[in-house]
Length: 315
Image (tube, rainbow, N blue to C red; front, side):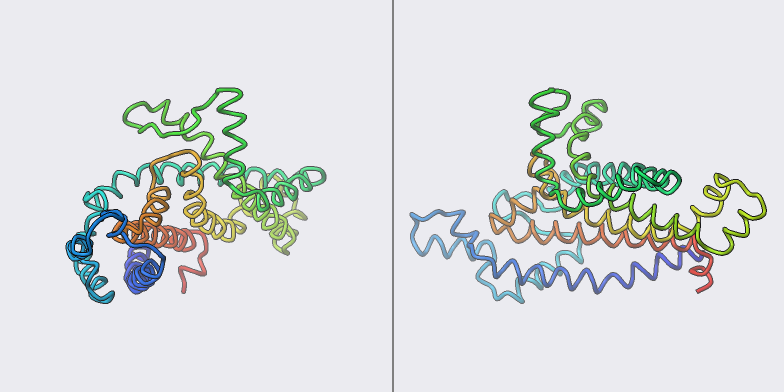
């Protein structure tokens, strides 16, 4: 029941955030140079034809009215239609969502497993492995994901021909090809995340090993392996979970570039295309979906806190 009450409180407190983000997005998009009506009709039309398209799209209304109409539609489960394709925004986003979720979830899982494993090995072995983790952290933070993606395409796809260059295969069509189409994007997306998680895990484990209760256990003859897996990991888990949550949110932003490089039909590439076209309903819908994903990630982190730290449950 405590976790259920926590989830309800977090979701209710996120409603103002969704409203604020959507309003700011609407204002910022309106300030971006560009006119979707002019893009649709072209340059060689009469003023009357141009104005007719603006009226048809609702672009002649004041900005607060446009936002209010969009907000009323959202409250009724309608995100509107694309200004260019005419397709319902909800259908467009739902078709793209599995691609982005596959990429982000796989990237988070790979980053978490490899990062925690490297961090633990570094904490246990020290020496050269510790310096290697520090170097990996610097490289991960310095190398842009899109540049690493281009290198992976040149080596893994063009030269070695182990993986497809671009594109995405749905899981329902061919699970094996689905996995192959995700390998290079996930690797390029996970590089910096693995480095950050590994360094955080190592630092947290070493810090926990230096606490008094761990010294008492060592003095009483407990093995280092038993102390590490039964006590140290649990105490070091809270800051590591925090980093995992931050990493997952950062992957949402990095996925925009990775999806564009690998020509994957996800939310990131859709948002980039809609921004270029000034397709406000699609941009608003994509931002709303991404904000909801961020809210859910933060909720999962809070629930993990509640599970791992008794002090959080007491509060």
